Image (tube, rainbow, N blue to C red):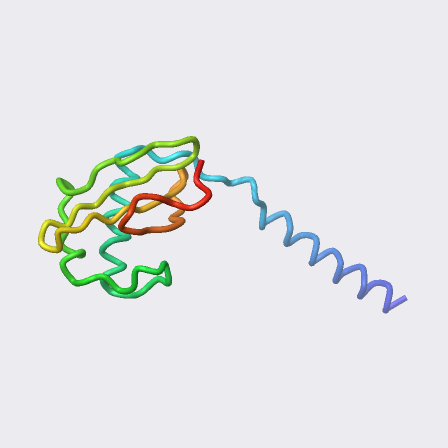
Length: 116
C-alpha cells in the first residue's frame, strides 16, 4: 500500500506541473516600429558576438546605428525584413524576423532562402 501511495503522490506532483507550464501564452504580433527597434538591437548585439548566422561578428560601428538608419524593407505574411543602413561601413544589414518578434536570420543581401 505504501508503494501505491508513493507512486500516486509522484504522479500527482508530476501532472500538477503541467498545469503551471502551459503553452497557451503566445505573444501577439509586434508593430513595424517594434520590429525596427528589435532589428537595431540585433545589429548592436552582432557587433559584440558572432551569432552563427554566417556574417560573423560585425564591426563596433553597428552598435551606433540610429533609428533614422533603420527602415522596413519588406513586410510579408507573418514576417518582417528590416533594413539597417550603416553609412560608415557603406553596408546594409537585413534582419528577418517573425511578426511575433522572433529573429530568424540576418544577411547583407536581403534575400532569404525558402522565404515566400
